[in-house]
Amino acid sequence: MKKVITLLVIVMAGVSVQAQFGKKLLKKGNVDAAKKVTKAATLSDEDMAALSLQSVVWMDENNPIAAVGSPYGDRLAKLVEGLETEDGLELNFKVYEVVDVNAFATPDGSVRIMAGLMDLMTDAEILSVIGHEIGHVKLGHSKKRYQSAYTISAAKDVAVANTGAGKVLADDEVGGFVENVLNAQFSQSNESASDAYGFKFLVAHNYDYHAMEGAFQKLADLSGDGGKGSLTSSHPGSAKRAERAKKWAEEQDAK
Image (cartoon, rainbow, N blue to C red):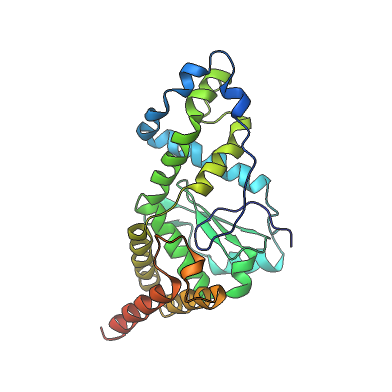
């Protein structure tokens, strides 16, 4: 499988994208627009949805997607049957046939699973990952991450100056924006809160909630150092998260 660009969510993928907007920022008429980066924090919900969708379309076009009827495509389709919505969020799912042990969800409800993660984990463990990623969206973490990336790129003002088409991003800005998203990070508190959301997701759907422990333990084993190398230093290690998930499962068993 060919490794293509993926978002950093669960493990450090170590990928990069060539920024594409340097010359455009220097064009006459764009200098003032580029100075307005502080407006990024005021993105409307409509702009955020459009921004999220544009980035997902770009990523879908730049990653090999498992076709309907393929082993990966069929496995995910069966796994998420009935999960058209979650907590008011409309969901859509695809598999990227890349080797990364990774997954992500975006503010518009797009959930993308990497084939490398599917090879490593059981169905129940994958569902625990999906719940965690949905948590990042529903708890507002993904929106803040997009705002941070957007602030760096000043994409909105550049797009307005160059396209006049009502897009949040100019077409040739999307790759650079995705790079900024890659470089943004979830905080330790964000990760912990999304773990808790993911566990409740498993319980609510009568999925195997013991699977979250297994998912984190596999990440810890994969890293070879108790999980510390799997994430940035600000995040709790996978081994620690496995222990916490085990405690939650034991408490749930006792109810």
